[in-house]
Length: 244
Image 1 (cartoon, rainbow, N blue to C red):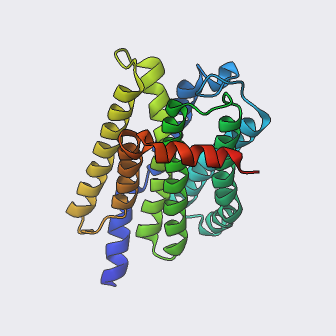
Image 2 (image 1 turned 90 degrees about the horizontal axis):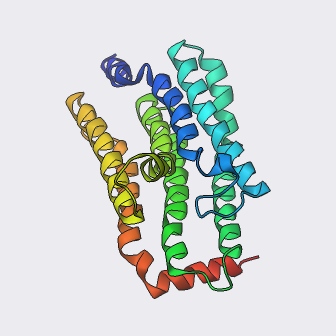
């Protein structure tokens, strides 16, 4: 009984989490309005069919998060499980599409991939990794509601890097360099996650699942400032571009 009560208590702070997922919709539109909706990628290249497919898949995932959270809020557990099972197809395809888009972007570069293009690509690989890990853990802990919910929320943080990055760069005055945007991006996401970790701590969850995505986002940004500047990372980018 105590365990059941603890589980219900750990879910209470997120009973209306679908509202926050809904807010990601206009945030995404704002973020991509000056690039994707203008027919271009972040790097300024024309959006291809593969880019459109990846965008559709990411939109589908966001709608799935909203639907799942709403079904739990309204205690419709069977439809929730049905939608959840579809993630076994959607999530791997999303990761593969993200990797395929990056491969295509490298091949649409000049004959030689620039160090800057290779460096920025660390975010594409980092987001794919963070998304895959947090979704995988959500599935592993799908029978433990408090953990499952937090790892699913973490998938939203994994993909929010691209959203916040573009909002800062395109719409917030003073952010006129990738360096400053990356720093602000990491700081804002980390502060939000630390607030959630602190809330979990106050509710008795001393090992918050949000630490996983916090660390992964940190590694991604740390990589941008460190190993993504190295010749080894550039060599990796060139190797990745040569893959079939």
